Image (cartoon, rainbow, N blue to C red):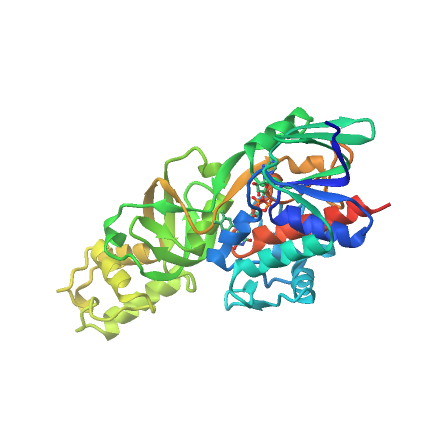
Length: 405
Ligand SMILES: Cc1cc2nc3c(=O)[nH]c(=O)nc-3n(C[C@H](O)[C@H](O)[C@H](O)COP(=O)(O)OP(=O)(O)OC[C@H]3O[C@@H](n4cnc5c(N)ncnc54)[C@H](O)[C@@H]3O)c2cc1C
């Protein structure tokens, strides 16, 4: 059978693939464009993203600040974000009838609070722009012949002038790209929670507070809300640390973290405050009232860990107990013995080596007329809408380059 011929073939019907296809079709209305998707449905990750609400982007409007949320890709995305970033994303969706709203923590969602709104928009736009959408087409082979690409799928074959790979972190596609001469950084999980079995937090699931968490024996540290769970610790501070430490932690089951439960004040200030409490609240029991605005159960648990039981008064605290309490408050060590994938949202760190990509166009430097965007690249971010922003930015700039004369 004769191969089907297109100007642009986009492999992967996910966030980056659809964004590239729609923009390319608008920029070059005459171009014949198709999306090849291996599954029977498209945009599956968009559907389940953000707990079904789709955290589309993050209200951070300075390119340099935005890049700080990418443990991998920070340097490379700075240029692209100058061309297409948050403000452009908001405008893009708004112009097409999907306004976004900002939540208190900066995450942005469709006003409808439903990822289906994004999916409906993408499907509607693809139809309007006559983008051929072919599902159940797993791409199995990719070869460059003279001035065109030959693409073989589980069904028919295709030829195209330009190909874009937007297959996320699918290892089979990474293998195909390796055969084409690309280097692949092996995939490891990012965004996971820590399993910790420790008396200090055992009875506190559900307690949340701001903290600074450091990975011991490294320079890595993050801050933000920390949530105590039934199995250990979670929340933005932990997820961020898992993302920045994804490589270091990939082969480690056991490691140690240090938690500062009082990130807003210095150790010296904590020490001075404890001495003041000892003096001024001499007759009171430390267990009775939580200090430093800590959740009461956490405060009591840290007192117990410092050898201060409910019968002891402030006046009776000895030097060792005060020192231990200060240590527990500002730098307690916790042994982590395993990781759990955060079911709501996780990404894979790894993918096409970034130095092999031109970040003005998202074109491969190894193969001409081959474009790459989204998670197929060795780019990933912490939670908050940044992973999709990478897909939109890459998709948009690749569309521009693929349709340029
Ligand atoms: C549960 C969950 C929730 C998330 N929530 C958010 C969120 O709210 N905000 C955020 O920013 N990020 C979120 N993320 C991360 C985000 O979903 C991804 O970063 C983003 O989807 C990556 O887009 P992509 O287009 O590169 O890849 P994908 O969305 O993974 O799309 C790749 C597509 O390519 C197809 N494909 C793969 N191989 C082939 C092949 N050989 N032939 C044809 N097709 C192929 C796949 O079937 C898939 O449809 C979440 C991730 C998960 C798992």
